[in-house]
Length: 294
Ligand code: SAM
Image (cartoon, rainbow, N blue to C red; front, side, top):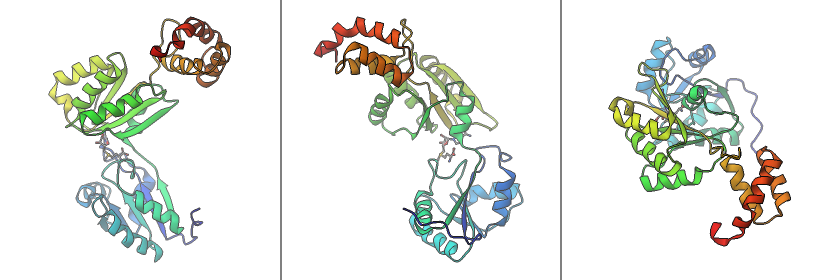
């Protein structure tokens, strides 16, 4: 168990979210905290200077990036132990979301140093909010692997996931990633590609994977900038009204359980209608018993 937080109100590490493009997308409290802390730990101090200048913040900075994270962390911890307050920011959005900071926060927690969030933008939440895809359950996977083979393997693992999927992607790999998605997930899967959110060339391309890949391939401009890819869950409805996921669960359960029980359990897991599942199971029962079908 981590130590309880110390009471010295000065000794706080604030984790401050900053804009993902538009410099005005920052909270009043974030500006206040960035002005008041003793030091700001920034991923790239030159990059963050523009933001700080824009808001009239002249707090000194120190660089904390993935290459010096372990060494600088000790300096930051020392300052915090002396009772100083610091803010952690990244180049864009919420620190630690595909950004440095994890060892530092972990160490603060272990040492009982107060860590406090100043919430704000994150590209994944911004993209999800405008995607038009179901958000009752979603799963963020950061950046997909760089090589096509590893990427396809990861996508194959996620193919039957029952929640909306979110990925970050760079301009170098956006087209390859979408092409691999098309190959592994199929052209009918719904996708939303959010490019350059909150910036001058903000653009959202949405539709079936086959349409989106065609559109991104055809226009080189659509391959520039920063991207979030939001992919619909595997819930294609068949003619029987059942989702692929519930049919998959039902088929698995039918290997071990009688039809009635398998249908009832699938209904409880997926929220789909027991009668429909039962009818589907009756039709499937003979087939799923064959080892080759499994
Ligand atoms: N911590 C950040 C956050 O909370 O969103 C993410 C940092 S991660 C290193 C950078 C990636 O986020 C980019 O490669 C891109 O995939 C995504 N991203 C950042 N800003 C974006 C924007 N304005 N529009 C679309 N995607 C963006």
